[in-house]
Length: 344
Picture 1: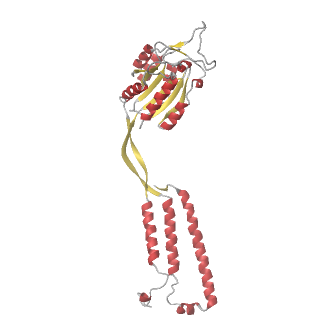
Picture 2: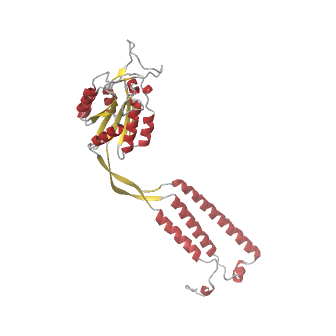
Picture 3: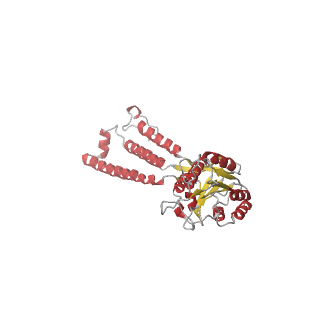
């Protein structure tokens, strides 16, 4: 198949047409002037070294070279080649808990600054995405409901942009429904076969709806692996209230404490065929998760290159036309004037 990569440059060929019309008009004016000067045959005899055809031939050689250069700009292409490079990667959908309990700040030796659970989760995900190469990633946000934040993609720049915009206000229905997150994540994967598909659930482990173990088991039966990342502490932490600037309180007037439910996280991970990782130190958790993901099957596919470029051949033609134009003199060669290959 023949095509031009940048066909818009072909409009410049109109310049060659305009130059050709100007050349024809100039020739007609010159001939008219010669007729007014005298008999054309007598004038030619008075100028024996002047050629009638050489200036025209030189012009058309230059015009042809200009046309070839314009064609080169349009990048003519013909044929396709197959590259033997192989791409290998997995598909990972990350479900981020954005319930109010993720606002809690677990101050300890690993989190002395008091960074919220959600901010720590976003930091961990961002560094994980930086390590992806030939993989695909998608984002899910969930609380009482689950929504697709970013469909599965290999555009990691966009993934990090969407990651930074995640906030607890994104989901109106509060609570923590891990089962809904797992089921929604399952709808994000492609139909590709022989590729590892991971569902990474990040939560503080407070599942208010139940059925998370059953959802993880179903996902595993369908060829997906569920990994649970627990953020928080077993002793719990108070949940900030953004409306009052203080901490949330329950019906008895006591502060609401959000406690990490590690047992539930382990059960969900076991049912999903994956692993549970307690995120105390982000670097350690990231390394453990990467080691677990490396065990998944990676898809391989052959890459196809673009059309073969043919501008080199056009460039050679343009070069030959320019060389011919330079070697061709405007006047006849006196030494060759008497040489006649075809006598009358």
